[in-house]
Image (cartoon, rainbow, N blue to C red):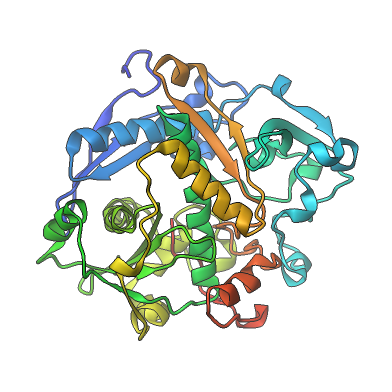
Length: 421
């Protein structure tokens, strides 16, 4: 880290509104990475790649911000010599099967403004080497599912790349486990919102010291965070948060979500992320009223945070279901490798293939960090593009039933844009 030649120029502590819990929120400035990565476009199209860290401990929050900046940088670093050009048919079983990828529905594809195409086994595309998590065998993975800001060619326009499934950590097992948990989390976010699942509100009958610190800091504020059990059929504890500031003139409702092996940690993280989310949204200009044009990370969140759209969250806030947090399983073993095996086994039990690609750049290697990307085609992706919500993916309709909820057909899915950012 250096303002002269470091990957991260500086780390700044961001102001928190008096109505918010007084958490430490830091931003790590990544700067204009296109100046050293000639394959990238400039900052006007890259957007903000800075990392953010939030928590009760300022030093740890600053470190998390730097780690996230490194993670985002690694998502942009590639060399065309890493890739091979081929079709899925040519690669056969050595490649991820495009037929398993999430896809839009026929109605979405019929829209002339749909920004994605159907995955095509016969289309030539770039592939990067990864491994199949279950077998450990090498597999080719479409490069557009791995790298951000990779200009897509004709056969690669079946997805809208976002950062889901990226993680950085000194311990490779922790990095891979974290990446997988984020993919599971995003699956829960998408299914909860699109299917309008009336999740059970969490009753905090037992509270860890870490979670208690967040609850104490949140007490007596003008913002209330409601927590829900969003654990899917995969079985990894997931907590969905709805933060409500009833008197805020522009940013009334924001959402968060966290998946982890300890529900107490997930609940604390869900509370934590609502604070940084509000900071981000306070500086975000309104996206306009045409939701069909939404495609940016914060478009839906900024739009849905407005007070006049508060009723869109009633399916959660009015849910009669309750669940004690003590009833959520604590799966953490204390051993990173055992934790990773547990998550891998849960995915395998649901017949969900997972692929891991090592993104670690030289800058990370020099500091002892590992950066990875996890791809789980069978899970429902998070999408910020209203015209490409992947409503044709079978997972969207099958998972609610496995979780004990009714499944809505496409015509009855939530028409409001995704509020998560």
